Image (tube, rainbow, N blue to C red):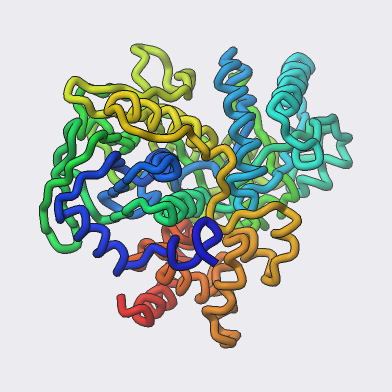
Length: 514
């Protein structure tokens, strides 16, 4: 198969990267140069390529190297924004969730039940407020046109029903729970890879390890970080989609980065939950911690919202205070308290929030913006993973207007990503269900790479098989072990798992000549 269904046109390889860089260095201008290959940049590259524009997507690291791999993996309907009166953002979230779960990536986005246990700490007024908010979320889901069989209505649970879904919950004082449904990504970084590959299938040039050292409204000075070679690229429009690092390229862009921390647990530490758990943060009315099963034996617990000052690192560190805060919060509702030894991994992401003066970072709007600098560079900032497509469309619209580009309308609302298909088709794919949930219609191609060797289909860590590492090199642009373990898969979230899988990653690269 070819095009958005997978195959040679969408394959990202080391050889294709070199060819794309060589073509850019030859000097032919592109309609749109996108700097930054997170979810917004990759989404913008696809949007522009689907409109018939010539596009280059460059990234100084790897696909999803920054914030786009550090999310909660939720594709949510914006319930928290309703609580703050941000109705427009909430509706946009619900609408974009419907596009993702129904068209763009139904293989990567799945229904997640979420339960808020009702203990004495959650009083009747707060419980009623949460229930009312979830009712409004149901209305948003209906307004967005989401099939109620995909995301059922919220409802009240008995104490026994709550304990069945959350076996680790503290039963003392438990008077029931509130059940709601949202979307969950199999993997946020995989969404970005799928976007970039689908863009490549539409003709976009994709160059990772290619840093923009200087940008302007008519192009950029790029450096191939693998060879050190510098070259100029001419572009009719330039989009800065580097997230929290946007101000490094366009100093007039002012952001208030916020750190969101997650800790990683083994699922047995919290009783092997059958649903996600929503935990009110003590002393607040509309902030919650989340306990999120990942389907691979791990559970994520998040998430903090702390302002970040000073220089921004490539990979944010997790302060011990964040770990203690998350453990303390979830211990309020667990039957057996967690301690530091239960934490097998942790990670933090930086949100690129627009500067709103003295307002607390937890209360800043997640609305996005496209800003044009004095020299014509467009910068897309703010927003969140769920609404990346709308943000990308607005950015490309701005590029078309500012540069007078000849382009058709946005088509990404009806454009499936590589591997995507209707759920009936996905159900019929002849491959293990776990692979279908990660690769969709390409799952048989992953199996085929094993060449009949059962060892290559046997999990090495977190359910990941060597065949998947081979596929990441052959189709998904992985260039080194970090790409394989930290982004194409999430093995690296747990250091012990990473050490176990490292020889397999090195073997996959060796087989590919990398």
